[in-house]
Image (cartoon, rainbow, N blue to C red; front, side):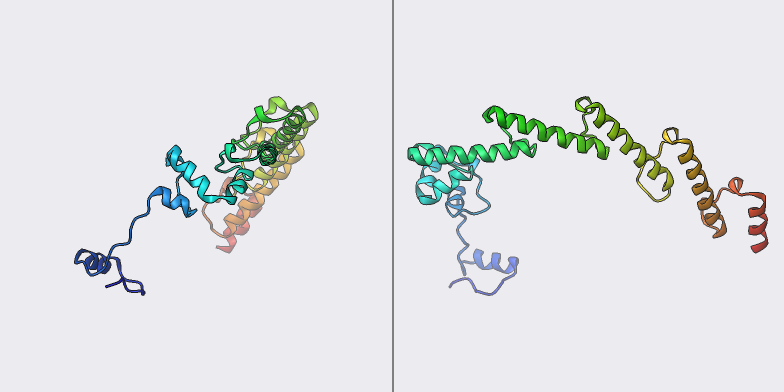
Length: 220
């Protein structure tokens, strides 16, 4: 008796298997999954012999795998194919380095590529610093970049102080200019008045003017 084509609950299927009514599906080996190009294939578990068999079985696809930087046996390639593969994988590595990825192999870069990668890394680090990210390395910034990063920080800090309620932005009052400090003070007084006027939690009575206290008392 073959297994029914419609979905069967696991418990029912298990009972049918145990009674011999249906045959349990065969479990494919890791090599068989790799041969079928199944996503569950773990190529690191393949033996050298299995890897060789897999490469031979894939035939024409093997060359495409090599070009894409996947499993590859260079001994099976012609000189022309090998040249194409090394050029393709070199470009893949170069692009990985430009993006700052961990898989980058800097020793395989040319002098010109190293220069481009360094420039890309510096530009990426500058953006980290402008955004106030922890990945920022200030030691590599130029004087102009350092000034720009500090200016960006001051703007973020001002925004944080102006929106200190209900925001994740940080605020360091010591880094505010005189003008910014005055604006923040007025903003906080206005927010406090709103909170007190609506009997919300967080009202600071001491920040109200005598006239505001009198007006709020008259409304109650």
